[in-house]
Length: 154
Picture 1 (cartoon, rainbow, N blue to C red):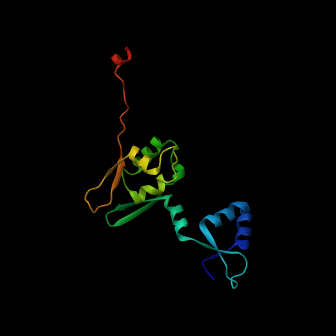
Picture 2: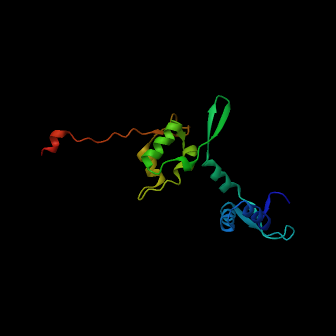
Picture 3: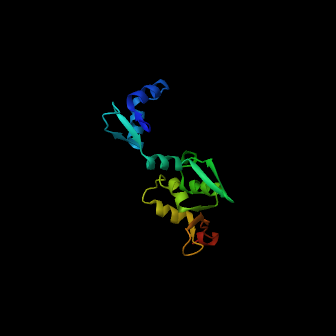
């Protein structure tokens, strides 16, 4: 049967490459589901499409150039941990983002007391060219608050 992973066989292969069993099992649990099929034998796994696709969506960007679509690597791991720098780097890479493109990159950014939506409100500007068009997020200009010097005297 194709499309299935035999746990024992695959564990032997990845252990030979230096990966611990615990990590491999955890990956199988996160990205797959056990298959109970007597004809296959042993402990068998099937990769689940959604978690695998979401994982790789966080590692690539696509850009439409006319009728062509360009795909290139841009991983979440390359982004800074400070939210302001995180969004700055995203918008340096691409000035305008649709929500479906931005979501995989923002989902894992954790800031106490702020949700993903709160971060988007703080660091992006959302525009919608027409009522039926997808909203577009672009960089929000953050103006630092400066107190005039003469106020400091009081």
